[in-house]
Length: 351
Ligand SMILES: [Zn+2]
Image (cartoon, rainbow, N blue to C red; front, side, top):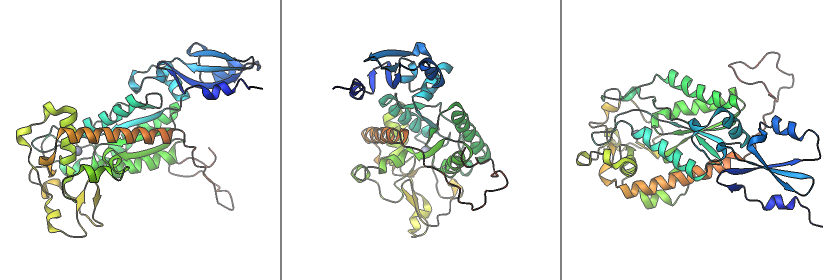
């Protein structure tokens, strides 16, 4: 005999562009309405679809199901977005010099647009937060226009955003980095978030998404390794040409070198896609004359399009995988239970 619930399994996850399947509720239970409320569902956002006599399938008609822009939701819709288990993506950028040919907002535009591109592709699975605009750029202050955020402020500020999200119920958070020197800070922020909240936080640099498909970069990159892709380079210039080409000073495009890379030391070299085992990172002005680190002259808008589409595709793939991945279970291996709370603001075992 056919089980009517089989129909549930044949339902598409997305019913239409305004509704997402949430699950089934047993109508024979008196507390069905309470269950809806307990799960944060308001009856007026759920649309019942009766299957058989016993079960009812609810779809969400809230805008939370189709809107990827966090700041465009209302507070009741945020509850709906939490119910959907949406992954939150926070672009983390910097306002920083990018040579004579690129504006100061390269590290803002690139991660923001890649995050939005993924959001448009899978709006039912993710939300893009307003971009965290300022970053850690203390070593670049010899170039006018660069805005530095003290690393303690940066770490505290981004962590405050992550903790706010986790408090409201978003337990999967991605920090999409657009600025290389944000990285050690974002790595620490994510580690702290994972110990100090009950959420899971992952940092990822947008350019690292281009390494997921191992065939992509070898077919894309024309500049030498290391050094052709580092800053305002073949990659960043290409992407900016694609995303906002009118604001590129095309007559000013000129490749630049990293002076210590020219020493050809096996210990000290740098590139966006790797670094030597003991690379000395100091003032940018001590190893660059123009602020361009890499082969900007090899950049094209078409290469920017290919890099953008690859990064968007891989970010959407990652979020789709991360969203439904069960959280790893923590265990306490002490023979005798600790007699004091775990320090440093970290969460106790089992919470
Ligand atoms: Zn940059």
